Length: 84
Image (cartoon, rainbow, N blue to C red; front, side, top):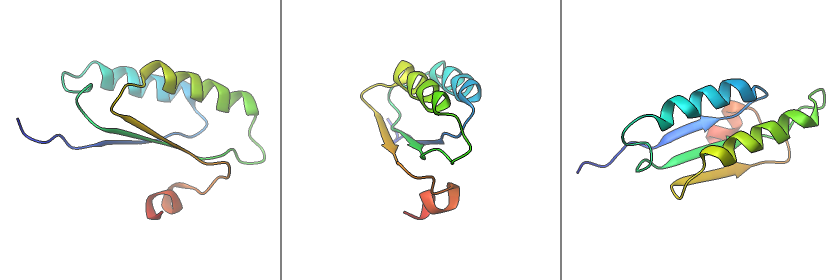
C-alpha cells in the first residue's frame, strides 16, 4: 500500500462549512487511514465565543486516532500558521 498524503484543515469561524468538509472527507474510503492535521486559530476580538465551541464540537465528532489538532489562543492567520 502506498503512503497516503496528509490532510490539512484550517478552521475559521464557519462551523457549518467545517462540518460539510469533514463529513465529505469522512465518506472517502481512505479517510480513517489518512493522517489529519486540524489547525484552530484563536478568535479575533470581534468574533463570538460560541463559534469556537461549535467548531470544537464538530472536530470532536470527526476526530479519530489519526487526527492531530493544533489549537492556538491567539489568531495568527493562515500564512503564519503555515510558516510555524
